[in-house]
Length: 252
Image: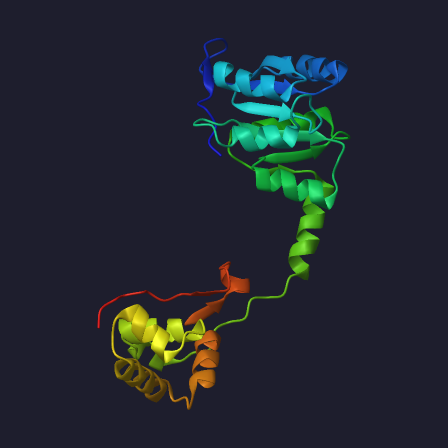
């Protein structure tokens, strides 16, 4: 997410003024936030709205640096608004200020591109600090949300270190490509057809790979490739079924 350039305020020296748009479906909250933030010397509230679509229009016309928003807005939700703002050429930083802090909400908000996520029980100074942090490109989370993320992270299994196998570096680009295709379940005939080479050539490549790596058959070959990191499973690489850390050179 890329924030617009902070405007310069000529009063009180060459300080940076953070332009803020406040979005909340309850006018009393939006007006209260405006009053609070307008009292901060280097923050200027350029507008308030309870309407998600209007917020997008205001962002395009007023170019705020930071948008402070609840998730409950009219016309479109705050979450949808955040997603759409993330597609703008110069999208503002987003500070989500909401009472909803379920795991699903936290995940949705962070994936949508918000910079900060705060509960509505946050203190005025914490909100002001979050706005300054967002404008500086930082991420600020409510303490309880940060703790839950740390707890979740610690519960994840540690990534397995790849086994060392110097012989892998001896494989040619073509041998790596054949290995990749075989690991994806392709037969010798399929590999030959895909690479436009003879089946005997494919078998020769596989024989050389097995010889270099010291494995007896295809099963051992694929197993070794995964263990050494030559091939990475989809669970670790984010691929569809299998993804390899190999080049796909077509050179014979």
